[in-house]
Image 1 (cartoon, one colour):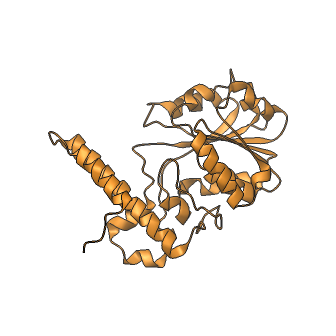
Image 2 (cartoon, one colour):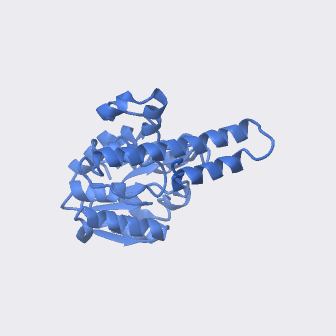
Image 3 (spheres, rainbow, N blue to C red):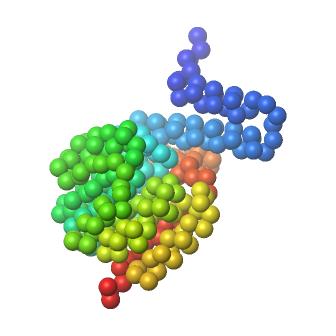
Length: 270
């Protein structure tokens, strides 16, 4: 008797059938490839969790219990500890600066909010997201890691909400899928002038967004850009027996194009 098809595989098969329905061209084939790649990436995540458990294996948040699926993007790279690997030194800098407050805008399921709460026991974490399901998962992740008492949860961030940055040392982490063009405006959110800011600029969604944000803050902040990178050194030993494609997919973050990060720190004169 044949093994039953898993819900994950059946869902991928349905998506693939829809992607391949109609005249085949490069766009349809690319869509089909992405469906298959995401399916295989999820299979690898499930295998990783079954073999090694749910603790993050390396990176700034090593040891964090991460038993939930990512609300957006790949989960395997998070669990391996190489998610957004180029930010590792920046995250360690944030931790070393002992900010009183961390504002995580677009917190999703809480990878950064909970990870930083574990590493920064002196800080109050403000986790904000427009997605109610994401906030619920973030609260569960905080509980799983014993940091619920230092994280406050809320929905959309408004410009006046950044006024807190003028009263205490604050770092803002922002990842809101292109909406940073509206939110990160120091003429309307004047508190941002007093904060250090780590922002993902989704140039693949809004062309020139990183330049727009750079120009807005260049007078008040020193700005460094961090582009995408991967770190294959974090792969566990058993993954070296997998195909080259599987090992690449374990590191893949599901991005469709450039999403450079800007690390913007207040100039000392201010």
